[in-house]
Picture (tube, rainbow, N blue to C red):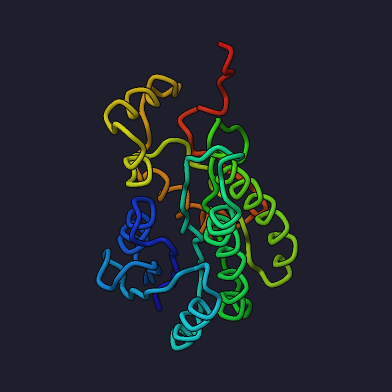
Length: 239
């Protein structure tokens, strides 16, 4: 039987690329997103808001017929470019609910379908967990906390044979990035500040996710946060 991967945020740039890559590698890919049905190329698409516990619980209960989940990719996220002092508590709570609480809930509900045979969980964090910028305090906080959750989960779930890691993408050409002002200018600016001289394609982040999900490729890796950023974090801002 094919390995089963569950990918949240499956309608976004990284999510779609991850679904496509897993399927090309012979996995059965389940896509979850809060937008309507029929999005992406997943083997099974389920509509759910990861911030809504009842919705997410129902989704994982509906997957019991699969018998086993081999990989969970917590990719669903939202971003907001608002200075901390201008952000309302409702805006803060909404972002945390999707970016952090959603990963916690998905991990908890997926556990019952992973503990018998083990598996892997990959949390999609961000370079903003390590170094950030003005105007994205809530987003950076959520992604930093996601890395801490990754380490804690790796320790707690190791006894069940479940590995937990995080990928930290840098700038990626996705709809989330495209929604921030002049797209072409933003790409040029980010490319100029990245040592490899360009932003990432979603499929490049998907490759890192697949690597950390595959028991043959990363069987002894857990509790790690791997940057996929073209060298951005290696560069001193003062240089």
